[in-house]
Length: 89
Image 1 (cartoon, rainbow, N blue to C red):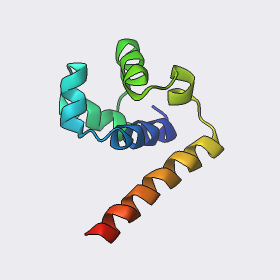
Image 2 (image 1 turned 180 degrees about the vertical axis):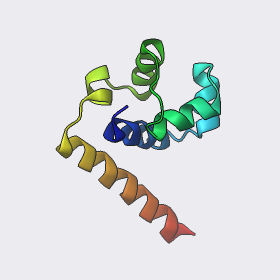
Image 3 (image 1 turned 120 degrees about the vertical axis):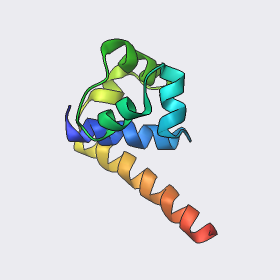
């Protein structure tokens, strides 16, 4: 799996407020499977890709399309949320 897609999967999961364990439970897969997807070690099958897109409220194109502008936007949003949590601590 493409590293950018793997990072996008992790960013979408975090944006949805889900742990790897919670996402795995929703999809009926192991936490290790989710971890491997997010580390670009394996890819979700078609059924899980469709389930992920529905869960996150995005199209498969949005989930899988590699575009620098979109990847930067997702990374910026994740960094912005992270900075907000650090300031609240």
